[in-house]
Length: 542
Image (cartoon, rainbow, N blue to C red; front, side, top):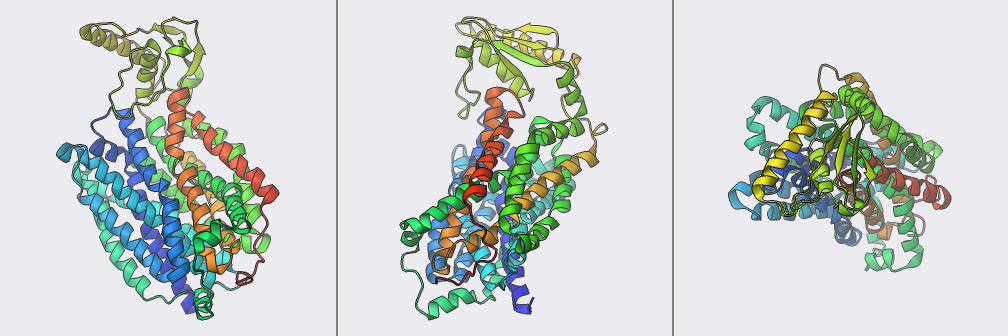
């Protein structure tokens, strides 16, 4: 590897690490952001709404891919991803100085969501530019190895965000929850300055320079990419047969695992972040391993194997995670099942984003009480008109309907009902939070590292594969869109969708059906219809 090639990989990767750091700070601090910016809602809805604001950044990523992909194919790779990093860095810095809901009311979450949208647009343009830029500098037979460094950046960005947050928590104590959470966002202005300085020193990609010198740059990359069936069908195959499955495996292994530990298993945030960070540290080198391996045996077999393992092992791995992180909860679930018996027609969707819905049916009240305690339960249908009941082990607690009752009576019944449920859960061994003394931390870290290993299998080779699927003149645009629809929509919406499934069904493992089904579809479509690309000449046909 020449000095220039090393510089290209280092500069592209470092800038992309910082951009992912900025993007994932929000996800790592979702619970605090829920309290600061969505405090007008009940706790459960505030957290889901914070996740929706997190998802907003993902939803617009494909639009960023279209806007900046077009610019990248028309004016060049280098200048386009200079613009994206400026937008990302400044948006993140502003979050650090943004007043909270308590200060400016509803304007706070509105501005926050607007900043998340800007971050999403910037990231939509960043990744495709960095991957294309590095791949076009790589010699034939080394593209998997070279681009796998770009693939480490998302994980390293997440890792960096966790480390900065942990350091700030440790140094600031309780003040972190009040105002210290702003510091990781404010630090991003320094990272932005370093990234811009390094990227200004880079030269344009040789493939783009050659194409520009020959007058072959695309005048209408969007039309060529998506208006011509020969390219559009490859875009669709790249999405369904590669990036959708890769995305859900990525977000399950790195984000859903973190939320599962803190929300469902009641592990304290510092411990959960440290264990996730340890899993990332163990797993990250395998991005390079699988990138290099893909140059030898092909990209497709590695990506499909990762999807297959995810489909087969997610349920047992997350159940083992429960047993290792919160053994008291696992024991209580095995010994004393919780069952809600209710008339299905009385049961609403358990999501109250505006905080204005008052659940009055006996079914909704029962489910709300259990959801507030993150208690996993089964549902049994009862005849029409039956008042809901909760069975914990052998104890049955009769619910109540608040319809038509005076406010004082509702308050009294609610207090009695919650007290009965809480005392019975406690008596049957359900813990209020995970006990650090009983936690099998090495096992938790091993399971998290396994989840990250699956991420490296699907993600390590994918940049090279996407670059190799499209011609130079429309490469930035064509590869960016399926990547960001896959990762922005299928992946980015995973935590919100999974938690909504859990809220509706009551079973804390049912959220896993979402990544399993999507990874299964990618496995089938990718195996049958996507061609291997490792030996493709990326300059052919330009």
